[in-house]
Length: 493
Image (cartoon, one colour):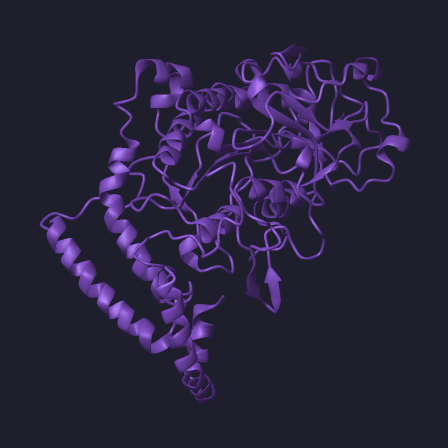
């Protein structure tokens, strides 16, 4: 959607006569909607008086999850070193990966010039944990303690082989920029229960890996073709979470309220004249900013958290901008009715020196991820909060560059990688899918990312085929229009 284009369209003579001819019908239809308890269409005025209303008719069916926390490990963590235990690889150390396994798969330019592809078994020890007996690497001792609360999906796959298109596809269902993100689709369809905080919040914590991290592009939380009020709001890791959260000296709350009301009337007049949907976004954003001046300081003040809770998240929880602090903040956000929280942790792109780099990354995230699940469960929130953990693709079994028993790197691998889910209607203590002995190909129950997104929407009470938005001549949807995605019923509780 282009606000400038919409503005220009509404100035044409043809548009004037068309809108005039339809105006009486539109008014009559609007009165029927209002009489039935619904507000006007999203392209006109707000539904009722809510800041974050749901679309009429949503959810499509009773949801098992009311809110979503997405833990994105940006850069692609190695499934072979964390969850996909392959004991037979030990005897394959430094042997060439069989061509029958690679089977002509395209590879990145970072390893396409290698004369050989030596197998690199994980140097980390694995053990079974919990009643489920799930295999977990010793890099993740805290995650090992929650395996009976999660579903491990070992066969997620994608078509993208480089980070930017893979991350864009992961979050929007399309490798090309310009599409709406997962969080934007959810807030567009379901709205939020909190009127004083954004419906969709994004956190970008610090990371400990010394390797260069991939860039984060706002398209991962952008509303794309949806109205911009559905974009995620990124809270800052350092300083005030939101710039200008405090009124300037000499401006009290009453004066600010009076100013915003006057500005709102001017903007509403502009909307009634030009019907530019972005005007409604401005009105909503000004109102939300006013409310956040009171809600955000309370949200970020963790002094009321118990000692036990803070210790559960680890020593970094009181350091602003860390992953631990973000994990605790995500619980506080969903506890207050925020619909979607997205944490993007960078630094997982380990083409070399993987053992040291992945150890640092796990040190950032392992305890906090486990604490988040335990914390939600203790507060009876996990049952209707869906938590997702994963990257944009996996890593190769063969080493990129020099291989030794205690050092190696891994290239990008889109054919299979691991993601886990907890709460909100998915099974507990369950492993779905299987890969071959090289963690290179799916041999049982493949899960394409579009299928995963269809499943997550299903848990939120949404039929992915029915949540659409007309753009560029297509009824766009998160799961795409090129391939029929399917709900993965095997992971549903």
